Image (cartoon, rainbow, N blue to C red; front, side, top):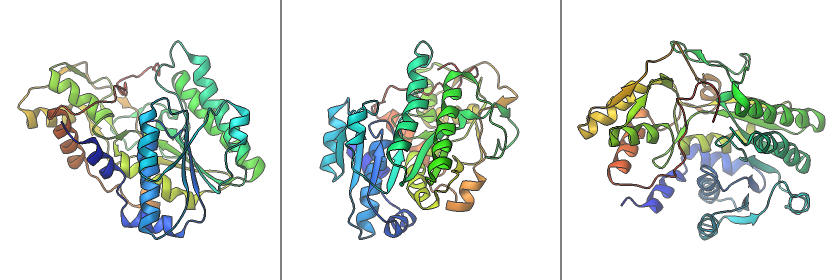
Length: 338
């Protein structure tokens, strides 16, 4: 079986740009909602980059930690942890004051049938966090789902294009942005909103979803004919570097890789590596959920990890029987119902 400790080391390995950013950033860093898919590796990346830069700081991961092993692993790697329900006012009030906050809390899957909680998590909790840390720099993860489907033969929308979220999840994600923008303007809180799609690593993400289907001989949907992809470590590196770029009103950045890739071609790559003929269903539409990350690239450069390396790592992981997080992305969904 593949070694998950080795994977975590890879996902949290700092590059020189991240170490330099952590070397010039003042103060401790707190990650709110750090128990999900990206939070643990982001906390480790912040810890390791700070050490590489010779900076002593607290990196604090805050979450409910419904999986105790996540908390134990973070503490073993030098990350402080605080168990906290962000809906609990006294618990939030007791959090330490820090000058740097990365906000990761959110709900996407399970929205259909539980719309009320989705709106509460995505639209209420950001206001609680922003009100608690009015003088901090706040980098908050958002999603490319705030955009409408875009012509598939284009580079996708930029940050200045209109937002037209499809479905209640996407609408609640836009509400998260609007609530954070309100507090930024009211309190002068410097923020950056990162519209992410799609972060991947071998245990989850669009590439894992496609690979699983090719490996099993199951149909690969072409309903969403093209996708943008970014290696999780590269997305996390942008989040840390964006702390120095926070502004009031918030800086908005599309965070992903360029160009977009045809889903059919990605499936064929896995099939070629494994000697398996992919099975497809449906036809690519004339539009897709895309994002143009030119602004992010202008600030931070292109993501370090290319599509070939991403496919290689996912293919090797799946072939070796590597664990899945069991959280499919539903990237093929076009009606916004997750």
